[in-house]
Structures are given as C-alpha cells and as structure tokens.
Image 1: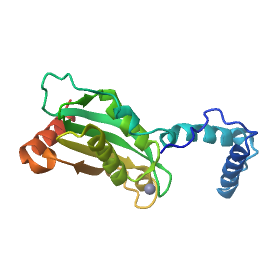
Image 2: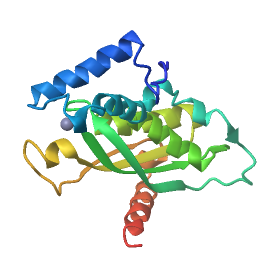
Image 3: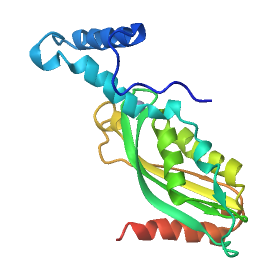
Image 4: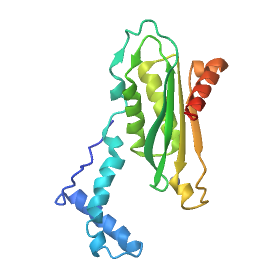
Length: 204
Ligand SMILES: [Zn+2]
C-alpha cells in the first residue's frame, strides 16, 4: 500500500500544509528561536520541502521495482552481489538521520532483476521512518517474496546520528544488521563467500 506523494512544492493554501508549516514554527519557538527573524522566515517551507525528499518512500511501492525480471541468464546460478549502496534514512525514535551502506546478494533461481532495481528497493524503504533492523528485514523479505531466489543476504551498516550527537555520544560506532535466507543460511561456504566479498570491497 502506498500513500500520497509529498509535494516538493508545498501549497501554502492547502490546509494540511498550513498545519505543518505552523507546527515547524511552533518547534522553532519551542527551542528558543524567533521564527520571524530573517534567517528563519522561510525555514518552515524549506523543512516541508525537505520532508518530501526524506520521506518519499511512503508514496512508493517497494514491490514495484521487482515486477520486471529477466530469465534469459544463460543458466547463471551463482551469487549476484550489489555492495556498498549508500542510503540515508531517519530513525523512527528520534526522527534524526542514520546513514550507511547496504549490501545485497542473492542466488537466482531462473530469474534476475535489474541491479538498479535492488538499489531502488533500498531507497524506498530507507525514505521512511525506520529502525535499522526493520529496514534490513524488509529489504530481504521483499527480494525473497518477488524473486523467489535460492537465498538472499542483506547486510546493513550504519551510523546513527541519535547515538552520535545525543544520548551516549558514540560518534564512531557502526551498527551492523543482517538477514539471511535459503542457501546463505544453510550453506556455510556460501555465507563465507558473501562475507568475504563485502569485506574485500572495503580495501579498494
Ligand atoms: Zn534514534
């Protein structure tokens, strides 16, 4: 299910947009600012515009990019790996960014999907409020459901700004989450190969 697309050019006459603009003003006052000073006058509108980008994933269907698959793959049945896909998301607990990389591998069972489509699936799920564990599982499940491969492996590595600049102030900490299915779970050699390939990338 997808929701309406947030407008990149919010209409200030739209009652809902008016409410959001007012809410941003309220937040500015709350933190001790004067929402009417020169530098902040246009900030509510900019925040609403930025939200359209940060949260564009609600209006998109993550199943859609995988509807077109290719079966002419000359019997290719080895791992397909797309690593180091950068993503930007926002944690659902504090609404602050967490950013990092996603690595996806799957072992096709007769069909593959365009590589950019996998990146698109990561983008759709990450442009929503998230927790990293959920993002990881949602990407893996969507691929498993649509491609029905012999296995999927998704590893997500991210830095959470809510940990960097507030709370425990761990600015160097990386969080790693993973979800594996099928052969990646059942076959230690396949799993090791995957982890070796994504580790190798770091040295380039
Ligand atoms: Zn957080």
